[in-house]
Image 1 (spheres, rainbow, N blue to C red):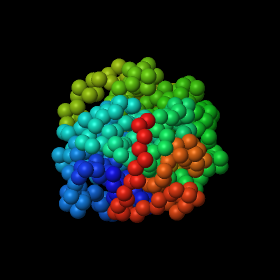
Image 2: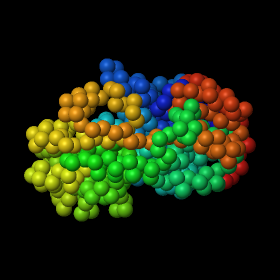
Image 3: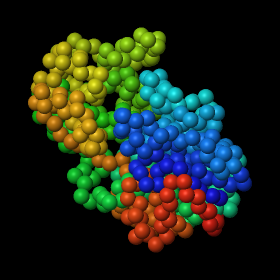
Image 4: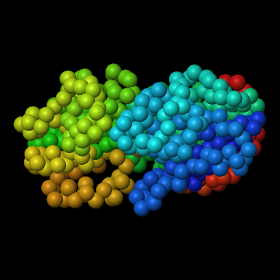
Length: 420
């Protein structure tokens, strides 16, 4: 088996790895680096699959999508009729993104879904998806073999989320891979210096901050970070507040198909249809979509009268409604996304300054720390380690069996395959 990293060897995000065997190939993710996603002045440099096919003369059989984050799927816009394989909840979330005109050019006509732990074959490759913990629902690692050699690809992974106990044994069956293709986002951080130790530890400071708020409590977090939505919901309950979400978030929660996750059928979870989403509903005829959340629908008057009763997952599209009803008075804001994004959110910073809104940063990373990486390597004992999804691959030199590849560099996997 040969391996080529097309993107992600020296940057955070953008993972796109090709595995080639017997003239056939599959791809692990098809992303765009975060740096490119954040540059609003340039179009992202998407992977050109037809060019890759011509250069290494292999038939492309499919793309394995580990999870539904842009930095892992955005180059799917160039996938054409190449089959895409992902988890069913991830497929559901991608459809919601398409409905709301977010990354709507990703082709979803040739998607097949897989389940955790269930092997499937694509040409000469046997793939085992492995459900892992990350800051999005339905994230997977992959164990891939062509019968002669093996690659264990972690995707994006952490050991301090709501599934951390599951993670203690998740790789027990997959020791001694020929290649451990591992993310290194936080290779410089041990995690010991973090203010908050795990996802559960965010609840208490959120609850305390909400309790100090006389009016509406606002929280900024990703709708697709369902662990965080659950954390906000739980903190709200402790602060005697009910959760308000927008239509996009409501549809993401519905798409994962798990009734144990807060959704608008619950009595303390509500949909507020803001003006932006009302326009999308009218334009696209999504009236049945709104009806599907009817039991949890909340209207402007109720929020205005009982502002201290609610916590709102804040989006820019809420601003006009909040300003019109003076709901920013006596409000507070929790920012629960990577702090680096806040520096670039001018409109949000202007809002905080203008209304003198009390603010607190309460967040924990969606990626594993160095101490977890060291433990993972010690446990798996891979023949070789190849870092990906990192700005600091040189830090991997402390592992004696590390291979530091560049984007576009091809590597022949030295087989020592044993069936797990």
